[in-house]
Image (cartoon, rainbow, N blue to C red; front, side, top):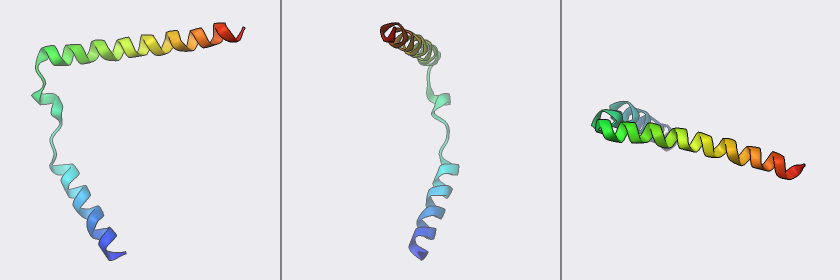
Length: 56
């Protein structure tokens, strides 16, 4: 059990030391990421709608 505690502490310590990758992205990459997120939401909506229609 002691090893697990040690491991967990190391993981927590490393989480805090890692920086967010957002600041390394270019503006174009950030913009593309937003577009992809919107496209995914639209796709999910259409997929769910199609399932409802097919059930009827």
